[in-house]
Image (cartoon, rainbow, N blue to C red; front, side, top):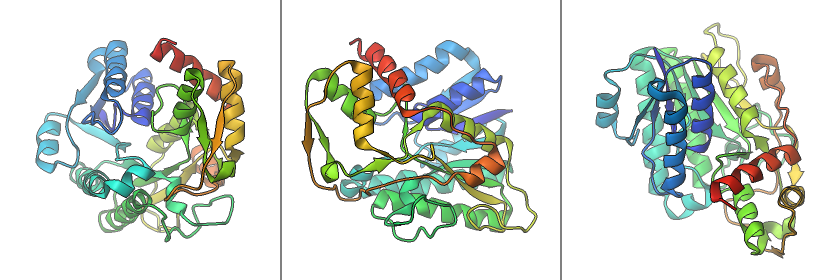
Length: 331
């Protein structure tokens, strides 16, 4: 029996697959290795898993929103659980290419729900702190309203949560939605701030702090996030009628996976400067469409139910990322 991991050549999917395989599991990964960001990085992640774990890792190269291709590819495999980490990411990309998000985040999520129903297996899926949208209350709690997204990406992730709620109610599928907060670390994504700033600083190019630098994020290290996902895979919500985190009375729970600290972008810049030994040239710019000023995770339910306790300070995590980045880029 294998665990299915979608987005297995993505940042979080690769890290999760690595952890599952290291624990002795067999992993069937799905990824279409699309060109949203450099496919060579995705190929390198997939190659890393194959090199270290051999035949216990299988990568199916397909678009999981393609229903017929998905059914054909998975027919030979027996699945114990589904970890649906794949999605079309990126707030700014969603402004120009909303159709990508309909296909991957809506149709793709529906396919995972149907797969979980057909195979009678639990589903853990990736949501996002972006669902909190224009919420001004800090820290963000899973009990807060999430009805006012400020990007189409956020709207699709919230829609995924509602689709999962309906399927859990109708078909009693145990599901756990995980709202990730600015995940960073080795093998990270080139479209995210830690990579963008590190690459610019090492290249001697200026960085831009939007909203004139008045932005704070709950930066969460990849290893801490993976521990939370692993715990969610091991602890499926029960069908007992009592409300779960997020308010569902079906076997569907929603948790925040953040570092439970809201840290200014300036602190991230300082951590990168310290790790690279170089000073940043800084420009300031206006707030970008679809962005928010602050994110901050209330992780009390995650601590209680999943034993989730993030350990990695920003300076430590960034030092690890910069070390990996220099090796990857041969700098």
